[in-house]
Image (tube, rainbow, N blue to C red; front, side, top):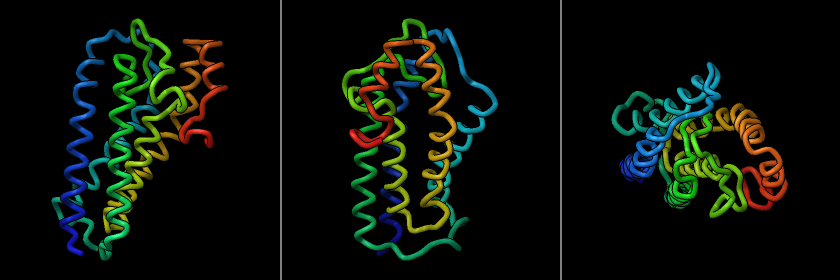
Length: 193
């Protein structure tokens, strides 16, 4: 199969991701931050996530990673498109359900609320679930050993090193309400984990 199919899909899904996030980023900047957990580790993790996001786009426009290309096959491409679409849907839904409580970094905003409805009824971190599903889609769609898994590797590190501090911040902010919420939800996969 022609790798330009994969390139068009990755470019389109990346644009959709930016379109989904842009209005939420704009809106969240208008809400005052009352407490920030952003430190050196958080900055490094966000930088890695951005690099992981851009590596597939570099693969789309330049032959930098051509040495790691392999043949594109229809079945992984199809499964990857399904994962990308599911990840983008979950990404949009997570943002929509969080509203002004969303932030790109670890922050508590003015009038911050514990969101337990919508997709957050069953998952505490559906946005991470969205990223991981999306990154699985990229790994399946991109026939390249570097660009394919790059976003997934960056997001696995982000999740592993960030979710603990994020949950501690929510526990400090919402106390017993968050403890009860943790008791009835899963982190990433409904009913499993």
